[in-house]
Image: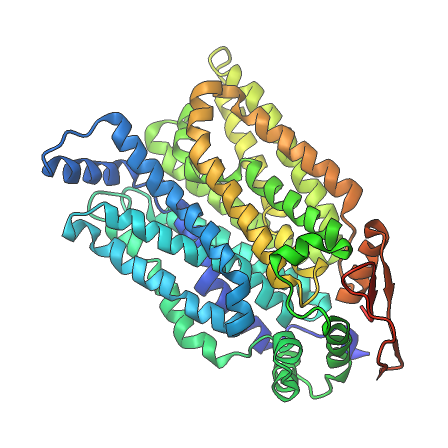
Length: 502
């Protein structure tokens, strides 16, 4: 029947694009925005510091700069902690609209920082825009995963990651010295992050809230049905509503799970371990070291100073193209295969890069191998490790546990990101060429875990996915529904070993 494979409707496509551009784009933009104008911004920091009658030492400047870079993932961590309370009270769409405050306010602060002569404003603004990224990196995939039909959930779920890579690329292009990566342009470049937020604030209210949120958490069947009809482009949405009711019925006793309860439930044990391992693997595999410190990595790989900015933009372009490819292949190839290919490529690239960097001075052509390794690494990461973990997180948790699960995944994601941003410059100084070996080991360990534990989740319902994990969690799943008729379950023992009706 047609209903088994709903098509991508205009409403779903536009809701996906506006939420991804308004929120996810900014995450990527702010990851890369301070990379190119770093020398000019540091001159500004020095002049402000010295105008207050104090001499700035190298150590103080390094500390101020690493604070500017790392306050962003620190804000992301705090943003992740706010996910569950906000999405449960304001809804998914409501949270995205509220979140624009954390983009528009810091955009203005960063834009006026030079005029008011304060670098502290930039550091505080980076923390606030980090909160925006921490919320959006968790809420956009959750919102879109709940809007999309199961046959499009993977493709729609990768779109936020695609916009993150577009954000990184746009920041790299603006950062070219002849555009905005110069002494006059950097305040404008930092302030531009507010524009997508303003657009989202005006356009997103015209699109539906998550039907799952309205039906299961708000008990509002009328509006859930209306939203589903708009999203699917037809009137008969009974089958999908029925699947949601089954989920709701099984969860009435649980209510909304807190993070603490999530850690105590045997039925979600392996799902929880899996999202922690995937998010640590994704961030500790070294990808953000490449974005935060791209220019210095390419310089140490032997790229001439003036060419570094163009090589960085080239790497960003490859990242966008490969993530775009993942959108089209995820539903045919599946999630697990893309994760395995991605982590496998990243592991091999890190090993070869280590060899290339250590032989750089002995062989003239080695710098080209180093650059090739970084580009291959970016390709590998863009296919699987970057986009797939949020898709899988959305799929392996049910409605009641999803907000808490995203909170855990997001916290691990941003803490790992913070560690890489803070520690990598010291790793590079201490280990030199061998700093990438650590990333290779992390990629290998994550690869083995995914191979052994993660099931394939493409084109399956949330109920079927729950069954895939039941055996590993040593729990039993009883579904009591016959031919679309609801039965009141007789056994209810959610908190222990039996999950009834889902």
